[in-house]
Image (tube, rainbow, N blue to C red):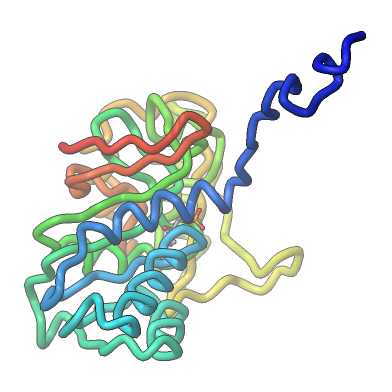
Length: 252
Ligand code: 5RP
């Protein structure tokens, strides 16, 4: 072989494979580009939203953002924001939120979401429901054709009182979809997972399509004992997806 064939220049560049966490960070940083000084912000929860909150803290400290007020969607995000020196408030004082940024477990083509596999769905839904603009940030693994079709959990927050009764009624609602309802526990233990609001979570697993999402949502919310579910229908205004081929922004 000629010497030029051996030179480093002739080696094709190896593709850079980004980790899932790096993709989450790219989506999160892109969302923070939409944040402006003076905004009231909904601060999401989870490994993707964590990057956005870190970035907001960083920009605040650099003086590039001023007069931000954050409304955290969980105790965990509250602690993170406090550690970063982000001024915090709540919906009682700020019933209208300028911009919310949060991750999701599933996103369908209409920007409907499943959230709450991290357990914070109730506060997320309250805060994000009050947002004028709600940006969802995901890596491309979260994109689905139909919510609930991934074989992963659809979380429902319920009161602890007679939780088995409520879980059975939830499962029955979706008999036709081969639903199995399971109480969420701490790891491998039998100890129920307890939400920030002192409630339990029942995860619904579907074997078949759940059909009309609005009808499913209404049916779940009609059950006494249910506090809220993790379907976020018609709430997201913007979707930012980071994938191997780059970042895409989709507006509703
Ligand atoms: C927590 C949530 C999270 O936003 C969702 O679970 C996505 O989490 P992650 O960014 O860690 O994948 O809804 O209740």
